[in-house]
Amino acid sequence: MIEPQISPYCGPLFFARSLESAVGNIIANGSYGLIDTARKKLLVTCWHVWDEYRKLHERDSALRMLLCLDRNPPVVLDPVEPIGQDERLDIATFDLEPLQGVLGDRRFYPLCQKPPPQVHVGDKLALIGYPGRFRHETDQGVQFGRFAYGINVSDVSGQSLVADISQMRFIYDQEPKLEEPSQHGGISGSPCFLVRDKRPPQLVAFVTSVAVALNLLRLTSVLCLNPDGTIDGGNSR
Image: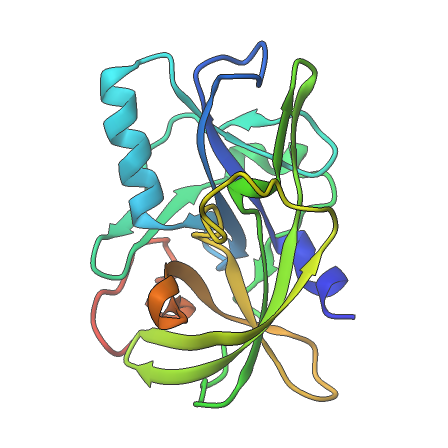
């Protein structure tokens, strides 16, 4: 089973107006990955997730970005200021060193010890995302259903990858809320792992967007991350 091997390195995040009750206070949600570069312990998500939060917070100063970290209550990401950000690559990184003590069973993927291999067309990737249609809000808190699936790489161009999701396999741990219009909304920032026979999964990319009409999933290579958490916007390291 691939899912237990990759689930400690990812999780859901969300924007909320209140820390008292989840009902009616959650504006949006996304996904994140956790990485250890040896120099920094990072949370990685999409630039557009960070940008949406920034714009909403300008209009409502009570809004907070919260992280779900295993069995612990959600934790406020504060201050919400990225170490690195790149609009074109749609990636943003945050220093998570202060929150190490509340990770529970979550772990930082040791990128410093497991550098990513070259990805080729046809390679298999696995990921776990947290779409909003699996989100359940109650007065006691919020629960996120996981969404795990396997995809095949259909194009590799510099630091960008594309996967064909027309034959994507879905694995749900609960039934989705069918009234939600977006099938994939909320998986932005999910870390993606290369799956090869007789080898442990290796982190290679992050989900950035889904072109539903074209059956394409767009990803950004983990190679864009510098050890200090800044972003290398070029096509080579």
